[in-house]
Length: 394
Image (cartoon, rainbow, N blue to C red; front, side, top):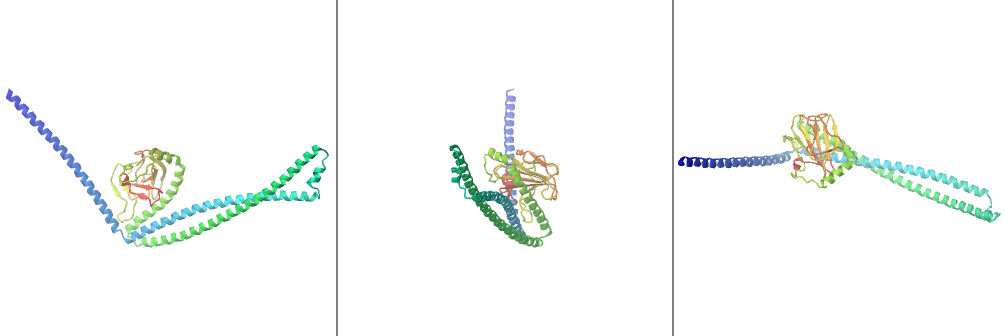
């Protein structure tokens, strides 16, 4: 009986030993699996970086020329927008100066007529002087009363003369301001004409270079041009929205501590979709700059806000960005979500949204070759050229 107990104890000990080894082996196996996955991720990352460098190196001289001209055209268009703003402001200033001048001229005319009437009255009174008027007083009371009247008349005459002089000065000042504004306006218009001429030259040169591209490259360039044109229009609307929702944006910055985002995998943003199926990165295969990440996802896939923010714009377009949402985040970031399902937007301009909140559904609206989400991250001043790699913020 004793021997049976010893045998059972031995079997139990062996079982425990084998179980421990099994657990250790399983843990080691899991660790090895994770290590292999990490190595694979690193390998894929290096391969992707290598591919990007190769794509950029192989970028044709024509594509580079087209990109340079596109940048130049964007710069000219921005200058023209700035000059248009200046021209509008100067036109407003000229209108205001003209109104002031007209008012000053009107007041001057009235005062001049009053002075002329006063002079005529004085002339018609003949040799009568203030002293004669005072000496004609019949009593002390009349003298005091007449003295008061003489003083009032003299004061009125002095004020009238001073008023006329002031009106003259205001007229001269208004004329100077008006003339100065007109000169500035002429300069701004001349500058705009010069930049417009340069813009047209650059566009013609770009068209000539685009004609040299392959059919695939031309299709990509057409897509880029359409996005850029749409972006410029959206940017103008966003500037208005930023002023309109300034209070919400200020509160957002205040609550976040006002920090700025430096990227580098900071974890500031989350991916806008659950899938990590990237169909296009920051560059197209031709080497042209894409400036966004495209996630290949089925139509109707939930799209989430990448961080807390304020919605600046939503729209359902049939071209370019299609159904899209633009969100302002704290610290200097904006995110753009494009090509959603038409009518699927779940937020509105001015609304505060939270990280991970669904904002729309993905689709293939606008200029899209298939279902996907086009995701951009922009830094101030939020124009088309200031798009940065979203992956730096995950």
